[in-house]
Image 1 (cartoon, helix red, strand yellow):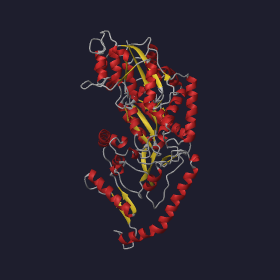
Image 2 (spheres, one colour; image 1 turned 30 degrees about the horizontal axis):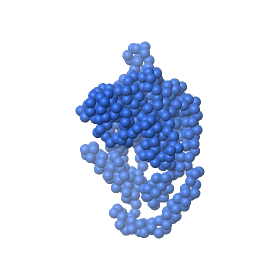
Image 3 (spheres, one colour; image 1 turned 90 degrees about the horizontal axis):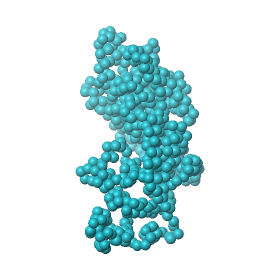
Image 4 (cartoon, one colour; image 1 turned 90 degrees about the vertical axis):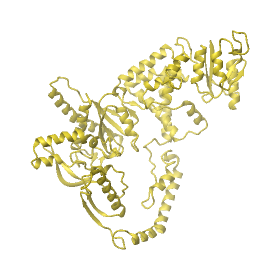
Length: 615
């Protein structure tokens, strides 16, 4: 058969594979990404006895493939001569050594035939769909796709294939959260490190990979999967190291990187700010470097920047601000010539017109009053205004406080911080004597037509406004039940407090939902009782594969100190969607599986109503 030698200059490695059919070799050439092609002169000596290789009989397919590309002939020992040419091409010294990462081809299936590889779309061919696009999720791209494609084109030895299958079976049955599995091109990474051009982002990605390996090592469910992946990784990379060495080296490297750079969300360096200078100015000046390297390594630079910011602030305050103040006082559009501040009280703004346009008009009025600098209050039942992208700097949201008494939500006539999206309309109607059957039907219509959008916020452009501190039954609950929770949300000061908060929320969720589930099962007269088993998903973790297609209810603990409740049949997709929002990259979650979407929707609504009443 034929032999192919692959040299990777970046990694300083080479591998050889022999016993290949002409068909398999053409397949490899079509799927390998290479810069230079060399053909050994032995290819000219074929069975037809002619030096014009490929014109007669054997080699015709291969010759046609090579002739369409640029190539050079070479002679002598294939490995030695090929490495010499690579060093010559890239200007490497003769002393530079290349590591042999050849994996034995014994006891392994043959590579795919060219026709088979083409028919399943592993080789991109016009008019033939790719099997991989059907097999893999839509968000799977890049290195994982290339790895799976290579497994199809070049099946590994049977023992390696068994380990891959065993790891997949274990992964499909785990119940714990899993790492995000950061993917980095090893060749690109080595080149950046070699040239000393790796930046903060690359080092963060390296640390992510290291920490994900350590996460699997420390988790009893994932540890066995990590061990099974050692040999498949050796086959893919040519690096064979023992398990303990991998773990110890990952711990060492992660620690070294962690001492030098600031991990996302952990930087103690803040962008400079000044009330009279636009924040965008400091953002443009400092965001490209602050929060990358830890302060202890750049103390002098940080001190110089801080002094420069203070000097700029002082200059603007003394020289420029008085001029602006004089101009504003003479051209103020409202009030007298000195620009006196007005007091405004607006009740049920734009309520008498069509809801959507009335909401937008109301939002524009609020923006105008905010820009002028008025003092006052605007009240409204147009809850859509909270989801508009309003340009306001001085306005704050207030709501009427409520108390939960005898199973009912009642206003306490106190003004508290937060947003209210519920008018207690059904309770008010009941007090005014509306028949119970009418109210019950109204509640059913509300749940079918409006509640999902209001509660889950799926159609809202800003889901960050839909959090548990905005209670459907009466807004913010200024309960002092938990010391770490206030009307503004949860404010943990340390990792220990965050863990305590997780446990308190998990306990409240379990208590509320378990009671409701017992009621469901009693109505159905069934002995099967589903337990509420909450599972935590920390930052940079994902739910296990066992959640795919299952209905679940989840609680998102957002970095902006708010809580979001939701339900879904695609938990991983929902987690990724939430984290794609600005500032939500490190959001953590709690979730539990329920039997069916209908129950999930009801429990979601229940939690939004009752979590504030639990503190």
